Image (cartoon, rainbow, N blue to C red; front, top):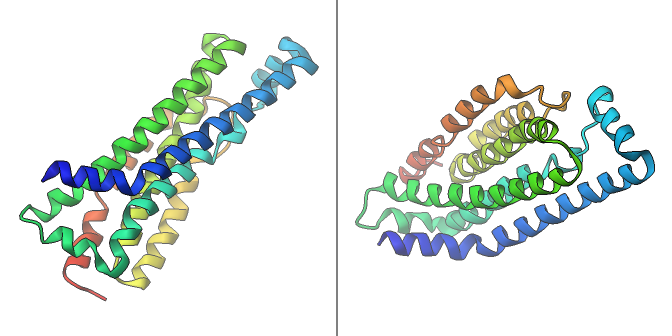
Length: 222
């Protein structure tokens, strides 16, 4: 039964996941083409100076890509479940309803995580061509909240899409817009380092928010 649920989720999101991962790789390609151009015209010393002392984020073009991934996977996974209330069929399986929903949710999280890890590894590998290890570490610290923003977006999409009352959907969307902006500020490189544990904890807490909307959906609230 569990394998059937996983397979169903995979069928729903597979092409969206592959498409997003390709898009992310293209985004990274664009970032490092800009880096290569900067090295060509300014030289390595001048380019590093702009990063270290002028606050330039060479990876800034990548900021919204993880966020886009969370939105895409969340919509692809949960929107079909609300068409004609198809998720009610899932809730009628001879399994605990919350366990079924969490299994679906975990599958989406793991899929998104796999894509993010590929992008992060590609980012680190390409960065190692141009920058020393300390600068790479600080760059990873800077982009890490953007990946957390992607997970937060995924969790909010699940919460909003499964919510049966439009007034609550609107309220959740406002809250989501506020929270996501916390993750994608543009301070100097590595400035978000001390905030990463708190942002990670906040993201983990958001991961179970969909249970509330799912409970109301099961009860048929309108």
